[in-house]
Image 1: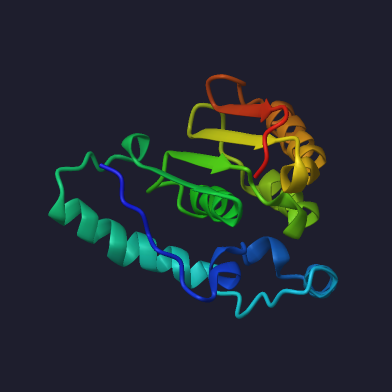
Image 2: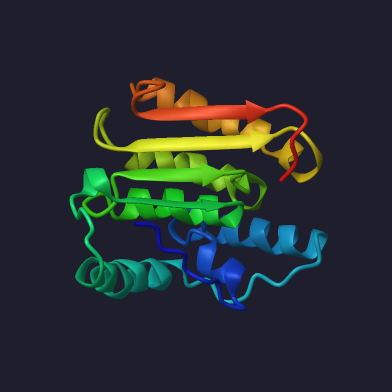
Length: 175
């Protein structure tokens, strides 16, 4: 079964991983990013958002539908900011989610702070599966440098490409 969760008017604040952006330096960079691109991040509440998913929405889904509940059968996925929150959910709730799909992950908004966070929380090889992809045009053209850093980190941590994680580039494709 697949369940889609509609986003709120606070989409950026819901999906922007809190822990990687907790430092004053990260908050300053985020403020500068939002001013540069003229958007309002809103209240950062991704930890509450994930709590809602794991403590209310997922249990309701498991009670309502015939689901396989072990973590190796439970994934979360999203695109753009949804890719960020999916990766964050996988790291924060490794006993609930065993896989994440991160489509056109919007790294520029927090990429410089996400990699050090991932370095601290990545699971041992064989514990989770993660899929990344992005294109090379327009907005997606900004994602490659960040994705390369994440791919390098995964390799350095001993995660096996094709088994623990996968990262694909789609030349000519857009966000």
